Length: 238
Image 1 (cartoon, rainbow, N blue to C red):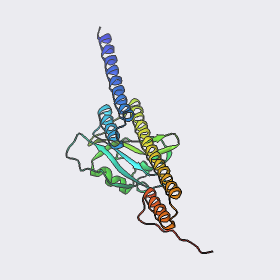
Image 2: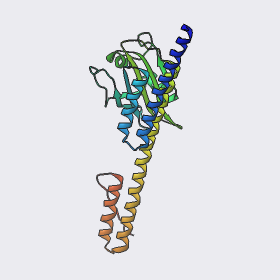
Image 3: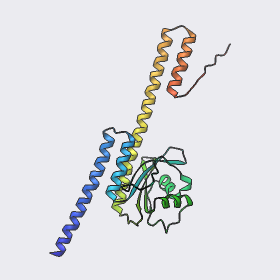
Image 4: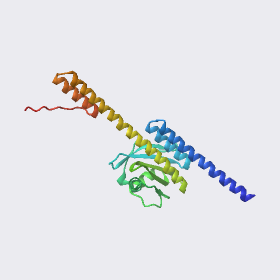
């Protein structure tokens, strides 16, 4: 009976954990499908990751394509005494473990920061928050990597299980999809503005014979669609 009771408890624990994981994935996915703005989606992702994996801290660092620096875009910790890092820039070249997860598109696990060989900048960042165990997973979708998600235990060592790493990577993948959707939406809006500008210029051309008015309208619309401050049109004499 004791062995049976133990197996029942283990099975119940596994089922409860899988339910929690599924609930986290559903909540993150719903935030994407319902059109929440990107910052809210990322906030949900870090909160759910902390809750599911039972860590003390989680943050998301976004890296613009072609950039060597990342921006701490979202972070969460149930500990209210932590000094926030939100809005901080991090040079990937100063943080080899972070850079590895981002460039190679695979997770990096630091089991004990006090025993790991780290760069001076990494030691500074980890010591400031008293991080002992750190899991870094890439925010990857297709061939693109948009950044990384960091999960840390503060002040104590945590043994990250394989299933915990997998669920964190899944949450990170969902966040990457949200980022990709946001980028596509921005590109679509820019394309729409360009078409509208061309339509407006075509309308003026078809309705006016005043060259000065045509040029003014053309430069004004071009400035608007390119989000610039000024523009010029040069006419060359034959």
